[in-house]
Image: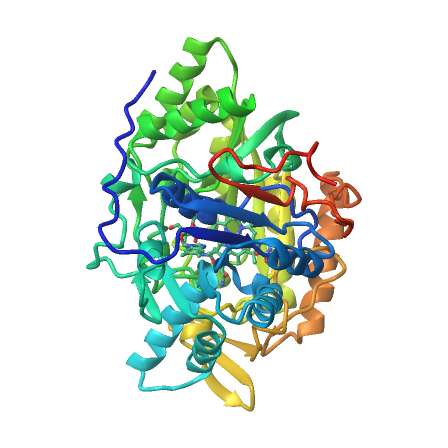
Length: 517
Ligand code: B12
């Protein structure tokens, strides 16, 4: 099947920069950083390439001496514009990179886009509606000091405004009324992420032994879970769907370009898409045409899951699904605003098993009202439904989550969220995102909790999490994930160029391994 991809209209605004270096900061807290590439910034790269820009991508994922790489690059490159992407836990590394650019290239323009800046803005906007000037305002002002332009929300069109001769401090792609906010229709006509600008071979992920690459097929999740970022950010909340044919086209592109037959679909919830069954049918049909078998993995929402969906997913090549059940306790499920009851969750497990789909259950503790009893209930539920794999994390109250946005300061640097459903409380510590790497799913044994409840301290939560994981794994015979396999690059700083595993350029100027010193 070949579907004609209509290029989006070229942006009609004047740009003053023609060379752009896009930077992916490292995520030192992850077990292995070269598992899933950062697709958002590669979508920006694809738009810029299509518009004729010279684009470099500096992929610092897994690069231990990333500061040296940045300084080496700054010493040699003629680029005068740098675009960084960052989630909240990447901000400390992004801050270090920003400082190096500012010091060595005082005239360069530095742009920040991605989830962190988008969510800080959403949190600040919400504070303003509550007539507050609190921690989100403070975090926003820090970002304004550090960066020349802040791009929030969808970046595909917004980036061209950030590159204009006199860019505004804020380019807002997070407003559905703005032409910068993507519609479903536009989404299906944009270029695929410029994966050729990162070293795809160094990203290693497999599904049932089959090498896989990740994709984003749709955007946005309409639900209001208390722990989830972006419930007040249209970019992350409004669903935007690509046509099924366009998604399959991307799979075929990955199959022919990189030889993969595995696909991890990173959409928040595949079954909020009303056309999900059609998508599954098209994926199955594409395999029949090619005479190959695909293996897929993706997320579903428990209470929306049906036998029909499960059957269609199996026929499309899914053997695994991931489900954010979060808790085995009814009151916690209500507090979270998960919309799924324990019965829904159990039913979802049954459906998956009936259709040969293995389930990875995603669980979290540290919700408002969490207590030894509720953690025990989560353990008991897991043992009762017997998922094929699971993880359990301690929750983090990032900006832009209801747990952050709706909290009030109850002691110095302590913020308390009270559930509107149950009145249960969650306390969190104020964090300086420039300095503190705060994450909830990292290397087991390296957790630190920034939250506590009226019943459990932060240390209790970490201890109970560790015990829950060890107990359930041993009883269900689910091994711990191997941890020694991660790739860390230590780029040797000699006379040579930065290797292609770290730096790539558009227009056929990619540095090859052979050229690299
Ligand atoms: C896939 C995914 C992962 C994958 C891969 C991450 C990766 N390397 O990309 C894995 C499993 C590794 C992962 C891990 C984590 N994730 Co995650 N993840 C996602 C998910 C589901 C999709 C990301 C995506 O590709 N989105 C689609 C692209 C198009 O969007 P985008 O990246 O935001 O990029 C757009 C704009 O932001 C903007 N933009 C981005 N960068 C730039 C740069 C410039 C210069 C410009 C102009 C614009 C721009 O333009 C892009 C195109 O529109 C999102 C939720 C979501 N639906 O977005 C969560 C999400 C990004 N993850 C989240 C979290 C919390 C985490 C973890 C911290 C969890 C943990 N371990 O503790 C880690 C952190 C990982 C890291 N490297 O920092 C949060 C981020 C919250 C925050 N405050 O930053 C999100 C938003 C989920 C949520 N709703 O809460 N994650």
